[in-house]
View 1: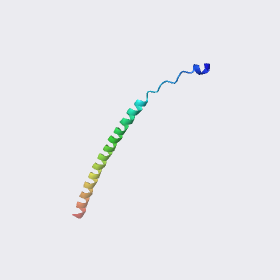
View 2: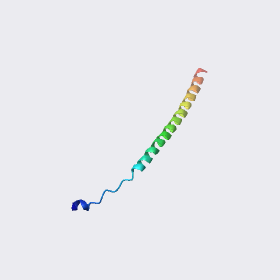
View 3: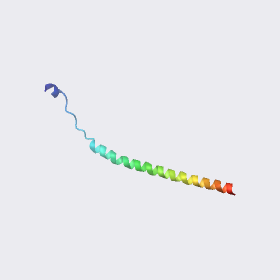
View 4: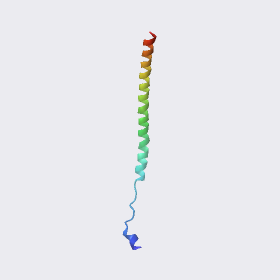
Length: 61
């Protein structure tokens, strides 16, 4: 029993609320990145469509 008394008690872990806050912030970051990727994809798709349309007009004319 004396040997067990020499070890300090384990400190409390107040990390659960921090983990919850990080969990709440991570989906927001993921949503922002998904929205950014979607906007970039739409812009690139529009540029490609315009470029293809110009090429088709040049070849047809």
